[in-house]
Image (cartoon, rainbow, N blue to C red):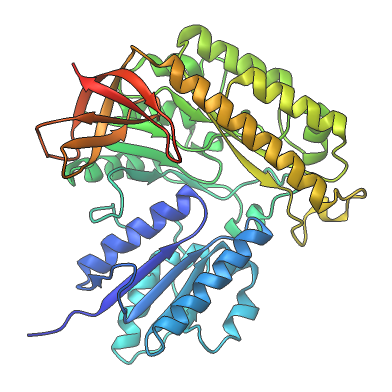
Length: 430
């Protein structure tokens, strides 16, 4: 009996990376590999890295070193944005077998197959195909993503992503729709629309909102969630699409700063007022609409007044979660050369203030959901019959059930909030 080779996959960074790792899991599984647990020895370790901040670099390096030390006789394949940003340096490390750039990531399984067949191929010889991934079948998650777009042409002054993900490119409409149908056939009931800058999707005259309409028209009992979106990536009527029962009332809308002065320095394509009007449009139609966001503190030249504007607007916007980043200098970006770099201790203090505000806003949003209904997609059921999952508003919900089946929808009524390290809402089945 042939012993299956084991492959371990590690992911750092964004939802797009998570999707691409899930797709590689499917490809390795179909190619006859066994997917190793996090603590298992593996014949192959694939590390899908992130380089968006200095901290991301540190985490990626740690993960690479740990994987190499743990599996000394195995292959170590490094891919993701760090592989593009530090390709030559990574290739010089003996512990790394292959360094595969983002646009060749979908070909990693063929690279590994060739290696074990004795055909050593340099990754630069692999085909470039940013959409060449299998439809996710075997996954680490109960929901799956649909990649509609890659790359970005915005060139925000702090951001290295256009350098490591390339210029914007959109996936053909029919390929997207076939991918949706395939993952639904594979049993998924929630799909997340993802990419680097999905609001800039455009293929043969079809733009993001039109593509979303086509996805919502696909038959089946499933729901659609949108990943991170730029505030300038849609029109004034976008909120009307959320009347569709399949489209979940949640957006992660990237603010970055509540100061008009800093937004200009960042080269963001919107104003604070534009962002405010967007939130007002959505909540006038759907009062419970859930907004989450990203904020960067300590951008070069950010004054106490600039930061106060950010705090005030974040409080006004009532985000249920704020992902806070301390500004990180990235080589080759325009912000790297800007004067008045903010000291680390000042960034730390501002970051903590945003964190505390985020926590208060989350509690307030959760409390506002008391007595309201949610349709929860069950992710797991514990030994006590407590089911957990997320409601359509992207809020964590738990409830008692006699049915231990996962990956199904259940309509519940929110009864209370259970505060703690992982705050959640407790509910009863309707």
